[in-house]
Image 1 (cartoon, helix red, strand yellow):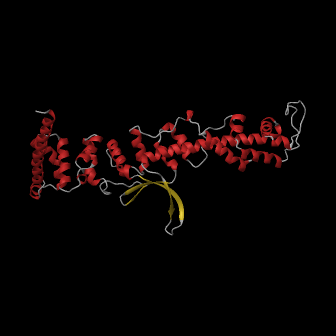
Image 2 (image 1 turned 180 degrees about the vertical axis):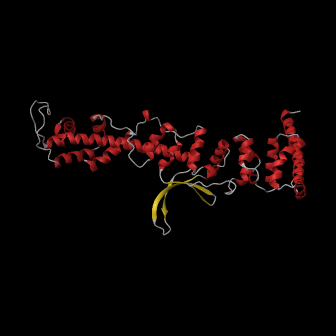
Length: 367
């Protein structure tokens, strides 16, 4: 006989055997839980349910766990929620975490009750439901810091926070390759105008300024010659403040470019995990006055997925034990080793074109 057909037939036979067995057990449970039997045994429904697994072990030659599972499925099939009679604590005392979730999934409990607010509490203070959509709501981006690896969290908090991140701190700026090579014509013209307007012309310079060993004063012709004036700004003491300001503006432009680029990377990581883009929205009081803003994410596609993952680890309904969804999500990512990460900051350099753009944008407003 073809092996595939043989396996199908064996599977069919096993299914039929199970159906016959299940029917026998259901008849037994119907009888044992009937009003006449409950009255005869002087037991209420809940108390009788607790004794039945031990009876079934002998009568049907099954384990206690099998008996518990069948009773769980029986209650579902007659339209009752088993967790009203068999608590999660009861299941946890007998099953491993994964087995509890498997029982809830395989019997169809999750499909039937996961969206039931009473059976599956969802009291997260950062979650809002509208119709069949579920939204995660936060005040700031840095609330997602806990979703990242612990070694990355100081960087993440700095970048996603409201203050300047200072990713690189103080670093030496090379005058030629960093400052001069990144100046555009508009910035150079602004620098020349700044020198003319602030009475630099006529000031005395060092004897080495013009390579002839003579002392010179700054002339308008020197200022108008781009190569000459950029060299003098670097070399002459009269330009100390201007040179310092230009190098500071380059550092600031570099930091801006790095922070903006890294913020975009972190934002992509967060939105990729949540499955939607964050959208800013107003928060209004009862009178309709705007009192603040929040960021809203549609997490419908992942909401229950991570709740189930949390149950697999803790054998607890997350909504009963976590104040907010992000905290629950953080723990799930931790034990599944799926926390988000940042680029290696030792090798992270901002886009040079963005640095140049920032540098030239900042010069007119700061010099």
